[in-house]
Length: 261
Image (tube, rainbow, N blue to C red; front, side, top):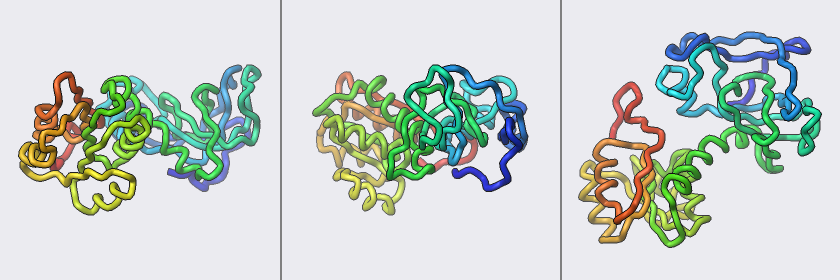
């Protein structure tokens, strides 16, 4: 999501999107606030784009336990231009194009970010691309490396493989030498996944357990990344090799409204 084209606030102030508390998306509103003093180890960023993630929606609707209990500014990732650096910062300078992550607070025209949570924005990347990188990549890496203990030569079953986290999981597995079986909800995504180097792509069928048994042909699955839930998750768990791991991310099955498995 790119920053709005509204007039800049007066010097020493910033525009923010703030909610008085989690639980009601309609309470989110734009305000003008005074800029805080810049910490010695922080970098002040003029925001050009922000990430809009499933976690943001869950936080605003009161379904994310990590959300602050009172008033807060949503947003976990951003990209922009450095406008000021704290006296202890040596790795960045005014004018640098950067991307970074925060623990809420990104939905603002100016954000102070700890220097160790920033990275230079790659030259060929747009601000929107930079602002959409961290949350999905962190989720995929944490699921594969820390929780899933993925290792070279293993095979991973990645559900929703054409989604944001799924695509990053595919790329991480490829970099680590882990074979990938990707699944999608409809056939329109198959060609795209194959263009990303995924040769084994399954369009999930109603009887996914039978499909998985048929398609795997006794090939072991050592790691499952699941954002679907329900019977798909149950079948995936039963297909795991001994000591294999199933990692749940997103858990959209628990969100309001119906979801087709």
